[in-house]
Image (cartoon, rainbow, N blue to C red; front, side):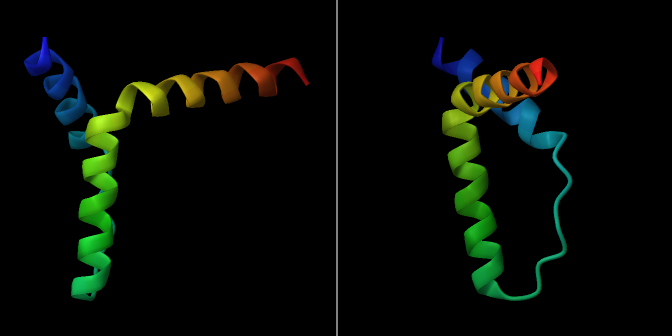
Length: 58
């Protein structure tokens, strides 16, 4: 089950466009962002769906 969880996170990260990073600090921040996305992708996905559905109601 953990493998499936991480597999879906890896697949989602693969489709994100990587920005051009100039400094080591920007690279470090981006790596922490990707690590957080890998771990918390279900929460991020649910929030995006909720925001999209709530914006359609307005």
